[in-house]
Image 1 (cartoon, rainbow, N blue to C red):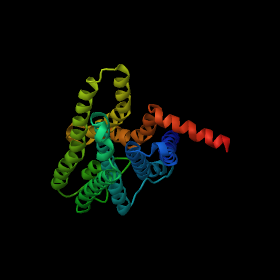
Image 2 (image 1 turned 180 degrees about the vertical axis):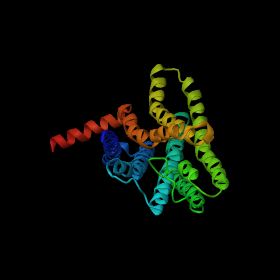
Image 3 (image 1 turned 135 degrees about the horizontal axis):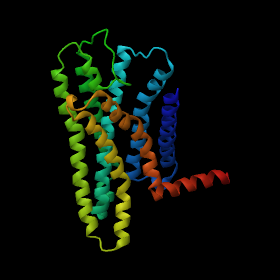
Image 4 (image 1 turned 120 degrees about the horizontal axis):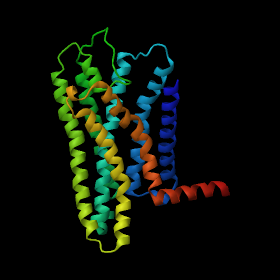
Length: 287
């Protein structure tokens, strides 16, 4: 019961924070910009993949039998992977947006046009779908032993591979290739974007201009570090170097904690969001 109420609290904060940010961006016209368009989708993704995992985990704390059907397990695996891969690419799209805004402000409106935003977002969800389909298709071809339990709180790739009765060589190869792409490509994009941003910031002479540029990027840097750090720790280490208990803690961090922290990071450190929140609250109090 203590764990049930702890994670119920986490989930309630996640739902309230992400849906609140989605509503705030939708209601305020001054937040209808490319940066907040991507933030809107990040909040939607965080809400969805937290919802894929947490309610089932909460049920397991109070039910006598902690079971999940094979179809339910594969469905949870697919949607979890779809949203988590999409998040990695939406974070890289946000880094590219910040790069253009700071390094090429004169062509920002033309470069990050509504059409470009939609194409970037389409690429985000296509990559998410492709990665989820590849992992799930490889998982479906395996045979699982009937008497083996999944030593985890959700249907994730590595715990399921440990319970297979057939060879998992192809699956492990797919994990390293797909996860390498899904973490490697966004990470390289983000590093290059922020290297160019840092170079541009250092050329700004005014202290006020530098601090404004740094504050614009700081929230995104924190979110990226939390998400990619915990994800890489979980998937890019050999199983022999990462015991399952440590893997649970790592996956707990990026599946439960990161979606809860993202709206707090982006709202508490963002003047536009705080101003929009005050405006919305004052509008409601007047009405």
